[in-house]
Image (cartoon, rainbow, N blue to C red):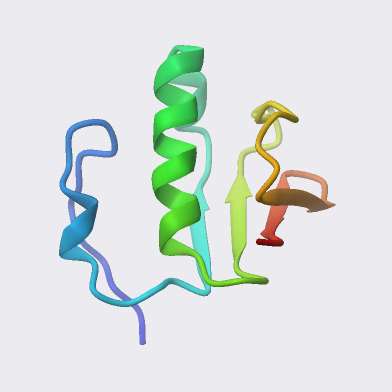
Length: 82
């Protein structure tokens, strides 16, 4: 099942998503946010991913290594480990 929806990543209510996402594509978006906002959005993504769920970012984007719930699976691909 695929869900396409308009959603504000910064101010949106993430609780509207009742199910977890196996994969989240967020390519070339995080570069427009400051570090604090990036961290906030990434933490919301983590809550929406099950263990072993994937987060795909753009090649020019990286997230800080302080997020211990994710590990790098490949270039610009992160996997939830907790």
